[in-house]
Length: 256
Ligand SMILES: [Zn+2]
Ligand SMILES: [Zn+2]
Image (cartoon, rainbow, N blue to C red; front, side, top):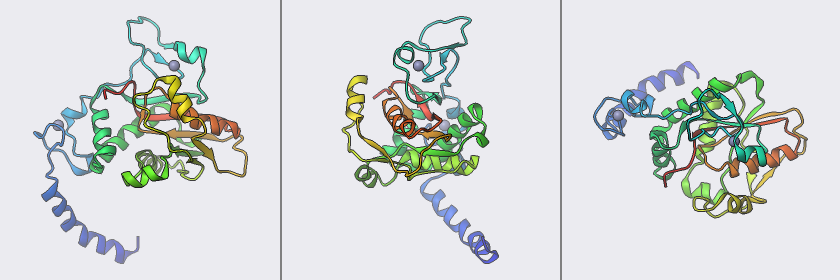
């Protein structure tokens, strides 16, 4: 930023901040009781603590937690991953779906509440820092939306979260590599098999070159059955991508 631009930004920013505070007072937008700052996504420390983390034992491939008591076992591969291994190498998430982050994601993507983004980006960055060395990865690829859907929503949540992760990690964001070329009906009420069928031919890789040797981080907001990320991983692996790993904020079965 030039000195002039930086001077202008300093001069203009405070009134904008005050205006924002008028519409969005610095109160937690989840409990409406405690102070919460804009740059923290308007969520207080206590509400942040309501996150249910993904804890061992969980499947080392798809990252799903084992629902029962599994004393002493730290690492295992779940039955679906053993019988039908996914195309992605592994998937990890910041939180279980039955916790506050899922509510936040619904507000964010269906309610257009972009003020939550700093918190969601923070969760994704924490998860990434736990599982990867940033320098090992060539690119971040957000799961694309079908253009009509993206236009209707006004943004692609995976792309925005991927961009935030890219800014913090230095891993380049690539939004042009994979496109969604088929508008698929919503997946929420479909079984695993129906989702796979529904997604067939939905994604296309636009790259004249092979992706041989490339290590790609696929980013999305929620991983449920994993069918969407699996289909994107399949088309990337077909182009010879070396590793395709998935990072999401939530993992598990959604409440709605
Ligand atoms: Zn709160
Ligand atoms: Zn698994």
